[in-house]
Image 1 (cartoon, rainbow, N blue to C red):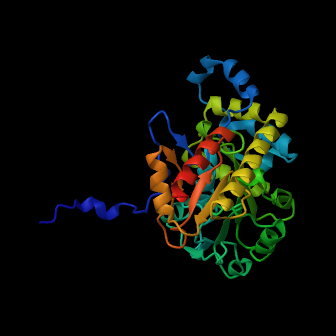
Image 2: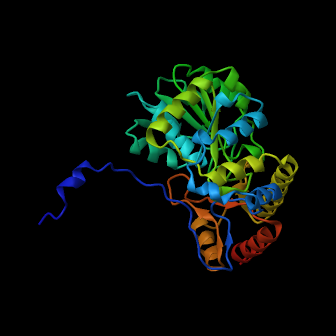
Length: 355
């Protein structure tokens, strides 16, 4: 007997994005979702105390105007070249919906941020995954054929590897008739930005987030920068779907974060220093460690399976990310925590691999 309702035939079917575990125990060390282990700038806390809660009964600013203004000043570009949204996921999703509207497939790597194929499926955008080389680097020539758009995460996740701006520019040059999106979620940790190229190429969109380097994952703040015609197109689509996407608190606290460059640089510097130290220790323990330009490490042990290490760490309430996927099944992605957290992590790893 068929108990499947007839209406299910009209459902939009996608393979959903699977986020990292969100463990509930209090004594955990959470190194699986690439959050920043340090608090946001003290200026964010000051701005939070000064929030006018009476404004919460009103709709927030249309297009997050005050945050856009501050972002434009911070990056020394025009306000008409900035779009703000609810985390970079919202910005990227809106970008897929806005710019990829042809019958030609968009292109992105086979190993990259796993939300890209989800959005393509949800919006019925044809797509093609280009395989990374054996060392997990991008082959620029793969992106020179006919297509409906290009999306590159630089530095890439989960591999942690960055591309040179000259390589990205080569891809943009080869695709002047489509939009090229460069997802720079991790660029502040050592990657090479292509932001200066938005004034050279009107088809380039650079996307960033406050979730990683600015310690504001819980506030959901993302933004895009590009030619004002790209930004206008994004705003047109967004305002046709949901005009008021960012909330009042996120707009205010995001702007405050941009006022403390010293704290920002110190915070990023601590993570980078810890990343390099931990990477060196893992090499001593028999791991292959990919050169990272992010706030995480992508590693594989020469003798012990990633799944085994993942499960043993989990028993110790230490959570890292394991991807049970082709090509990266024997790799772990490890978020860089505080020095204290990483010390506990390394001691646990030693107990697992030195038996």
